[in-house]
Image 1 (tube, each protein chain N blue to C red):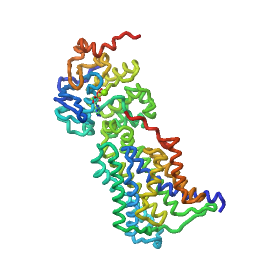
Image 2: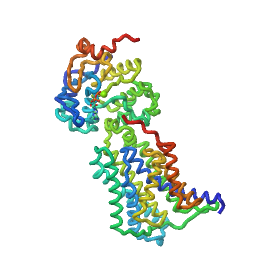
Image 3: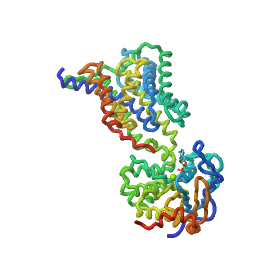
Length: 309
Length: 251
Ligand SMILES: Nc1ncnc2c1ncn2[C@@H]1O[C@H](COP(=O)(O)OP(=O)(O)O)[C@@H](O)[C@H]1O
Ligand SMILES: [Mg+2]
């Protein structure tokens, strides 16, 4: 492989990882944008999502990498797996908001954030109790199609990840930009009290943000499984931390920022893994985060928050 | 212009012995207001006297601890804000409070949040654009990039998009140049003559009393004076407390 090929290959890998981080980062940013709350339960909603996806795929009779589907059955199984996983995760997100966080809404200080850490650990331990601490072989029905691009290889897996991510991020961008509820969401993020006085049902907006964020995390969990062919109770921590970093890097609260941040973190991870050593990726990722924050505290696309008086 | 405000002496909004608190801080103290259909009623008062709290209590963002707010004959103290907007109460908020990173058009859309889309929306939008040609010119711009006067026009337009019967304005002239202040008061009078009742907090007592029918004076949460605008303009205490500054010769 020439240097160009290696670079090309890492771009392909990095964009796939990055798409997954971006999906996950959006959940942090949607909730933070409205509530200024760092929702740590998001880490493990993602992890639970990958388990739900695994069970759905197994329910279709798939196990490991032995059952390969093509054509309509493949499309049908994937659509069903994404739909069920996203709806189930969305429901978990809504449940966390409605029953655990809403009663704390009026409480100032770190209580809500601490609660999300607690929820995260409960989910983490429930998964260990329910399905054990070993890592699971994730069913992958994708045929081993691949296309050479120069000396690099583009696999069906990556094409699928990009297509799904583009669809979801395009859908979210449309929702936030052009629908009535999406506009209410942006208004609420900018001035919740004024939005309320326009007649916006702020509770409904908050619930929607949790639903969408958690549903996207579910899609991310399924993508994780398809990408790495395994899942485990532990995956939420690493992926979640990187996605959170991506959200901060792009400017937390900013939707395009989360997408940009996610792609950047994915690319940095891929390149540092290939050119330096995988062990160094975290050092590099988090050093870049620190540098960006020192010079642009509000993140790449974020605004410096005006002092609320 | 023909006056279609429809004043007939009946109440559109009433406060009956309303008390409000922020924690232990007692803000409104046994407050009574009567806003008749078709009137412009002005609420005067010094800083921190509870004027904005009055507006927030009408919108349901602050709930009375005791007493009742009655709108169109119905008690509304327990109604959600969204339901009040649906019934025709719209705010022009203190310091305008537009959504700064949304376009002027999107701000107007949010004003119409409780209204159905369709012919009625287009009609209301046309009306706002007619009242404020500047708002139409600026419709694709982000609201945060507009001048203070232009923002106030958007804020009033945004309230009109809700098809209100009652508009509650919190210091609409705050921070505006004298030219804009005059325009804003003209517009308020026009809107009132077209049939919308106005309850307005103002520091600019001179201007406010010149267009208002009646006024209340609030002092540390207590209504200390009320009467017709003409009466209050002649009142010595008011002259000293609120009109005095305006009469100081420019230096
Ligand atoms: N959200 C709040 N929490 C606590 N105190 C408040 C709040 N809003 C207003 N206050 C207090 O209530 C009093 C009345 O405020 P406000 O109604 O805003 O006065 P005005 O509009 O007449 O200047 C003031 O003492 C103010 O400090
Ligand atoms: Mg005030």
